[in-house]
Amino acid sequence: MKGEVKERGMIFNDEMVRAILGGNKTQTRRIVEEKFYGRAVAAELLAKHCPYGQPGDRIWVRETYRVHGKATDVATLVYRASVRNSWTEQTHRVPVEVCNKPVSEKWTPSIHMPRWASRILLEITDVRVERLHDMSEADAKAEGATPATYKITPPEAVYRVGFGDIWRSIYGQDNWLSNPLVWVIEFKRIQE
Image 1: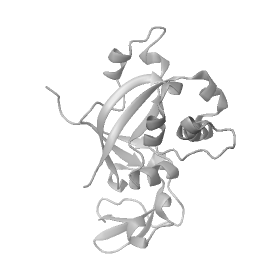
Image 2: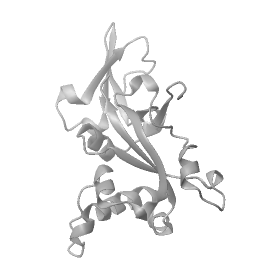
Image 3: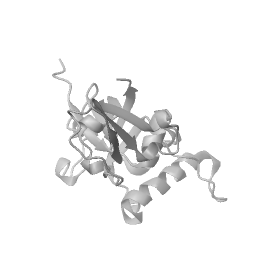
């Protein structure tokens, strides 16, 4: 029997937050640190030890935000990933008693986002371990990648090439070429 549902924060960049909000991102890949596998790999065993959680656990999305204003009872937060959207879509209101941050024109980086400021909650539906380059075209699309438009891109790999661009922008070319083991975390968005 599964124990208590756990919640953990996970950082997502603006592009990936928009993909989650648009319903285009239902997977994320995170590098498996060597301490989890040493020299030998047993993917089935590794998946049970994923530091991001197990099916049924929840992830609250950490994204760049700022406190836009405070009234007597609510604070209005603005999220950088949504600034191009309507005011209703880019804001979130929280009780002023939990908002311990001052009003600011400066963005607060995602790494410093507290749980109370998060507007997106995800439920983990599956966890597995694989090599980064083993992802399918469907997996790359589920990562929220957009199709690559390079003239030399093979038609059967447009999303994988697009995902490769995202990965290299975050982790660098050397990491991409090393084809690391990754946690593949599948999720669905929960409406709170």
